[in-house]
Length: 145
Image (tube, rainbow, N blue to C red; front, side, top):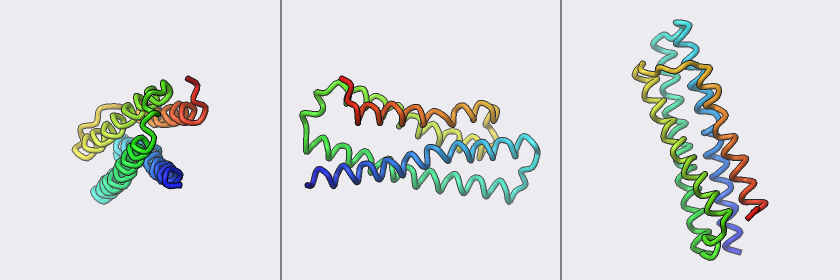
């Protein structure tokens, strides 16, 4: 029964993490487009920066708790680490962690007016977590190998 509780908490915090991963880049798009149109007064700039910072904190908590409960699941069932699907899933999770911290880098660049990419680039960037989610869920549920 403990294993099922750990799995439920792992999924709950994964959903929290992904909510932030989906929304933070969307905030970057709005921020970047407002900046490009010279619509970024001091109050709007402050609002974007504050929203991005707070969302990053919330999604970081989600990430940390997702990892903690995932590790607890592995501790309860260490034989899973031998499974090929889990090894690939963990590689994708590592990529997602990199993406998570890259979001922080973009946040800081936007805050400091040093972001050089277009909102079009951000629109493609915004799709990355959906691809990761698709692969990670397929691996965890289907366990293809």
